Length: 253
Ligand SMILES: O=P(O)(O)O[C@H]1O[C@H](CO)[C@@H](O)[C@H]1O
Ligand SMILES: O=c1cc[nH]c(=O)[nH]1
Picture: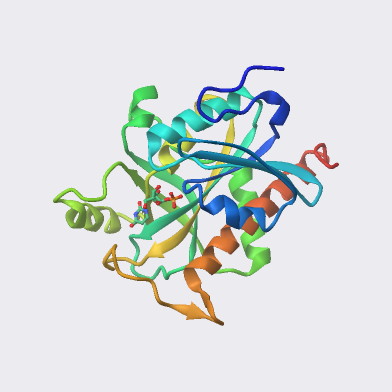
């Protein structure tokens, strides 16, 4: 039996070609609803993992925790056990006024305003997704007919400095759609390791809305934010199906 990776506590035997990466370990429970033959694999620190099948394809779901540092560790260890495709299933605050709660952002580039990616390579290196995987997420979101936007995000390391409003205004005026904490590290470290990455963000805070405000918008009895989470999970899983088909169906069970 191969040794388990230090943090994710997984080995090659448990691995899969495809992985969903939520930040929040709690989101693993939502992902479970869409998989068959689910197995709980490990739960160490903020990294909780399951495996399961979607339309015959084996996938892992592994939470990264918050921020670039723990995301970088998760990406490295998943790469070590043979994962080739990773899609972040995240949440974000909108920086573009027209983006509504529950809208998805399919990220086509991220501002590297965090520390982890800079520990690897200078800031002029771009944080961009794998083009084909991004295209697969766009196709999947179109087929699902959910509300989505394609554009840039800003990944950051702080929530509560004295400059948050000023920073948000700055990036909002420069066409950045939303803010999260992990996408830039995922894209940068993933690309350096040859992993194909994409990031889908569900909007949980509208632009200039108070971060601590209780979210109370409901559609058909379901929170629009919860609906956005369902949309991002299905979009990512369908993107894996598209990618697998493009590769000749090599992972079909
Ligand atoms: O919901 P997740 O995926 O964790 O994403 C967002 O939520 C956390 C902050 O509340 C950060 O991790 C941010 O990127
Ligand atoms: O406003 C927000 C909400 C989630 N994640 C962020 O990074 N910012």
